[in-house]
Length: 95
Image 1 (tube, one colour):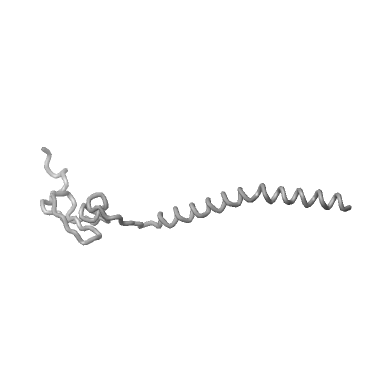
Image 2 (cartoon, helix red, strand yellow; image 1 turned 120 degrees about the horizontal axis):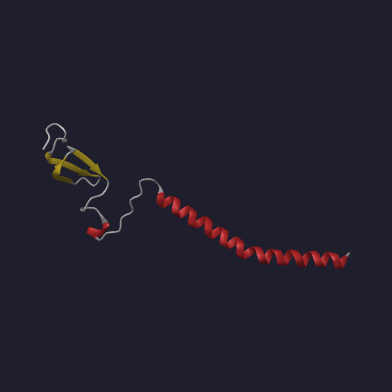
């Protein structure tokens, strides 16, 4: 093995989670920070937890509301067009 080309190995590297859990393992990085670990992940805990660091959930909700509004307006549009046609024919008959 060549000397001087390998990174330093830390046998007690600390991985700190956002929930406060600290795990010790071997790594080439002395300390790391993570947002989720096995102690707070919903798969392991069985609890439903929303983790939204970049606003993706809010963005998704806005998009679904917008698409629901578009669908509602599309359903109303044929009825409005029919009413408009009816009013035009009535005005033509009256004239």
